[in-house]
Length: 324
Image 1 (tube, helix red, strand yellow):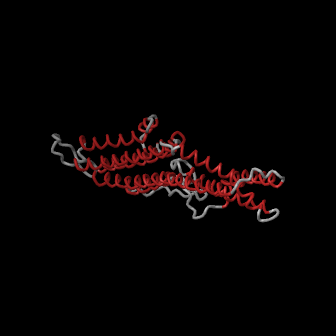
Image 2: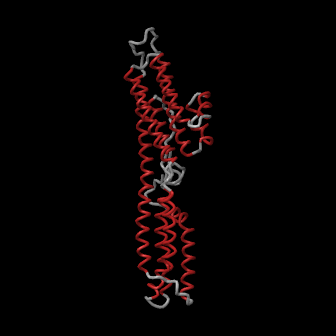
Image 3: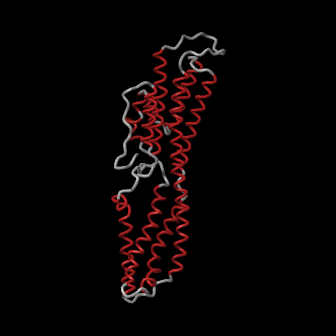
């Protein structure tokens, strides 16, 4: 996610120079032919203006849909941050001592402070691993960063097991549910009310993960994306043909004004098209995507601080004005 208030000129030029170069060459060729007697291909301005209006509406519609996908992805990850804090509070405040359950017939000893600390640590660290595993899966970079971003929060055997699964985040939540069952049935550390509430939190996490997977696995409809690109190209090709006669009527040599005005107008339409295209998939590793790495680090800091740890990792900082 780009965090600077204004785009740097280097970024604007890097994204625009190819299209500007192609458009400039095309318009120069059109003007050269026109000034050398090949003026039969000029067309009236009115059809071009009508086409431009239609294209503007179409790419505006596409950009609205693309932004909705990005904003939904950001809302989902905002929900992950808040639900992660809820999970930590429940784990720390519910699992405090043995709970008397009428259905338990045998008397179990009170849980020691060390045992409780280990269980808190395991539940919260496994959740941090889930956040990072979900991020890696959405960005399709699990093998690259698993050892540094997920494995440190799991037991070695659990990390090896999860690494081989097709959907590690789902199996991590499944393991959390299994541990809650053990805490309820075997250790008596959760009563029915607490167990149900924590299971609802896991259900909420499953819903949030499913929302991310839905956006990731459902590409933006190609009919909108392709035709938007096609219409912008068509308008850019027709624009100088409609401007030739208009500028030629202003006086000798004025026809060459077609080049800057046509290039500028076409560049604006092309930029709007590119903005919509780059917002279609918010879970990649691009400049305008959801900053999942920073959000995962925020969750890690919050949960480890709730555990009482003092040696915390630093917050993720922007790299060249981009927060990943």
